[in-house]
Image (cartoon, rainbow, N blue to C red; front, side):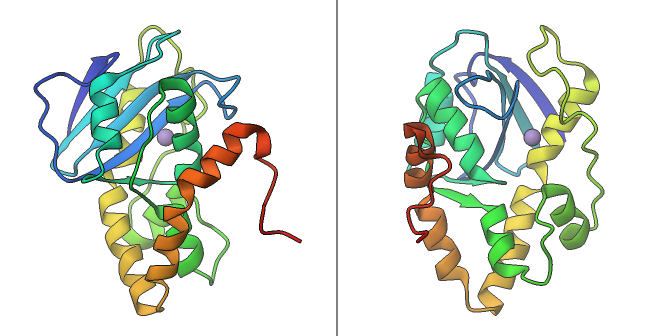
Amino acid sequence: MRILLHRGDLPADVALGPVLAIDSETMGLDPFRDRLCLVQLTDGEGTVHLVRIEPGQKVAPRLALALADPDRLKILHFARFDLAMLRHRLGIDCRPVWCTKIASKLARTYTDRHGLKDLCRELLGVELSKQEQSSDWGAEELNEAQLRYAASDVVHLHALKEKLEAMLEREGRLALAEACMAFLPTRVALDLEGFAALDPFAH
Ligand code: MN
């Protein structure tokens, strides 16, 4: 695995495949309060791109082109959070998306453990370290452990999608799961309009 660190945007000459795994690191969990610090991206062909987002940065045109490309599927784990961050901080409308957390919830009904670490362990036999998860992603210089952690959060998403897709297919729930994923942009729009706590389908 090759890790490339970029400042502010993807380089102009980057060639990406049709299915991208995406993750982001932030200063915290509130898109309104907390800054987006890093966007990780890989097409599953061995290179992980890490894009540093500078304080006050409002656009990343080449990253936006890749993430909003209707012909490129984006795989994320708990896409709802990253989509809200990308939308609010960089104005990026990331779609179409495939969320491994939604897939897991609808496929793995024998457990309530749907974290990325749980999925990697059970479906891929990979132990993911979550040690750097709550480190300072806004630091001027990210350390080696942070770079490796950031990359490890996207490198398994293609394989996870394959496993989860097969499970959903087997259980007859693939179409239902993909319909939920198609609703994500609307869910994120609600979150950003102040309706994060509202479930419009609840009684
Ligand atoms: Mn992450």
